[in-house]
Length: 391
Image (cartoon, rainbow, N blue to C red):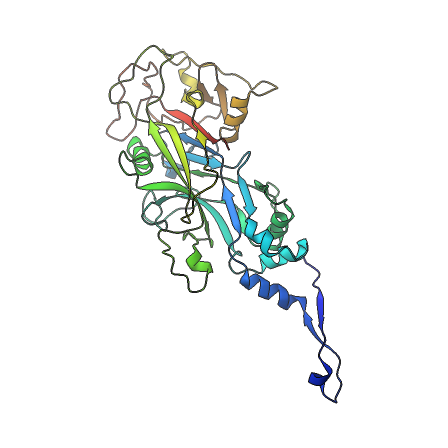
C-alpha cells in the first residue's frame, strides 16, 4: 500500500532569511516518518491459547510418508483469545499521529521491520539455543514461522487498524490461503526421540527448555532488547521478546477402564501447562491454562476398530459442535480425524503411514504389557492431549 505523505512547510524567520528573500524551505513528511520510526521501540506482543501434544512414535519425518496436517508432535495456535497485537506503549507514544502515519512509522522502524514470529523449543539457559533433531535447525520441522514478515506496509496497516487491546490471528497479505497464527513441530521418528523432547520440556527436577514463541529476523536467532536498543547491555541468551510455555507430562487417565497401566507405561499426555514472558517481566494477570482429562484422546487405527480394547467409533461431527469438540477441532482438523468424545478417542481419516508405523500389536487394553522394540517403535497406545488458555 502506498501512503500519501504530508508535506510540512517550515517557515524561516526574516532575520534568518536576510535581505535576499527566498521561498520557505519545505521538509517532506518522509523525514518525520523516518525519524519517528528510528525512535520507535519494539512494539509487538503475541501469545497463543491452545497446545496439543501428539505422542506418535513411529513416523520418520524424512520419509515424507505421513500427513503433516494430521500428525505432529507439538502444535500451538491462537484460536480464540490469543493472537498478535501492538503494545500499549506503541499507541500511547504515537497518539498524536493519524492511523495512516502510525502504520508508516511502524513500517519504517528498524526495530520492527523484517520480523518473523517463530515457534520452537529453546533452552532455558540460552534462548538462542534451539532444540533440533540433529545438525542444523530445519524449518517446518524443528521450528515453524507463523503469519508472515511483520513490518511490511500491509501488515503494519492491518495491525494499526486493529482496535487497541484486540488481537489478530490471521493475515491474508496476498496469499490466497492466508497465514494462520499456528505452528507445528515434528519429533515423531521413534519413542526415544519423542520421550527426549518431553524430558527436555518436563524434566523431573529442572526442565531444560520451553516451547517458545519468539521474534526473529528470518533465521533462528531470537530478537532481544540488545538488538533494538542502542547501548543495551541485556544478555541475549536470557532476555528475549516473546513467550515461553512449559508443559508437564504424566500418565494418561484410565479411571474409566477399570484397569491400571502397565508399570513401564510412558508419560505421554500433557497434564499441566504454564506460560511466561521471556523478557524478564511478570505477566499480569498471570495466564491460566487448563488440561482436562476429557481432552486426552486415544489414537486408534482404522484397521484396529474390531480389536480388543480399541473401543472407538467413527463419528461425523454434529451440526452444532459441543464446546469441547469445537476446541479440539482447532488443532485436530475435521478433514484429518474422526473424534469420538464418548470413548475419548480418535481415528485417522487419511491412509498411509500412521501413528504406529509397522507395529500391529497395539496394546489397546490398557492393563496389557506394552514395550518399545530395538528400532524405537512402540506398541503402547498413543494419545493426543490438549491444554487451552482460560484467561
